[in-house]
Amino acid sequence: LSAEASYDLNRDWTLGGKIGFRLSETAPDRISAFTQNNAALAVVNARYHLLHNWDALIEVRAMRFEQSDTTEVGALGALYRHIGPNVMLGVGYSFGTVSSDLTDIDTTENGAFINLVTQF
Image (cartoon, rainbow, N blue to C red; front, side, top):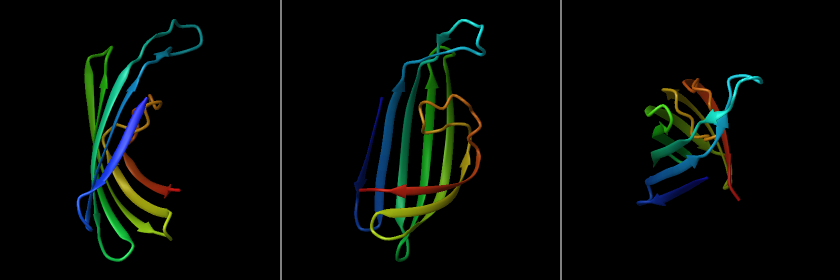
């Protein structure tokens, strides 16, 4: 379960955030017993509207793993180009091991990425 929102502070700045919670059970292989693997996610981001049709984004993510009593923190930076009123294409780099996808239990989220965003 997750919720995401954004708020335009003014013409240039947009603040956003996401919170989520995962109730799940996982097993390392087919023959092992399942164990609880619950997690909570918090994301905060800021988007600056640069030149015509360009945006810069910075984001900080934290994922709290309930059973292991640990918290992972990550961040990313990206540059987006608006392609029409409903599509953005971005490139960026993610630092850390936190994904904003609560179903992703693999912690290999660092590195470069390309992102296509649509809205309707």
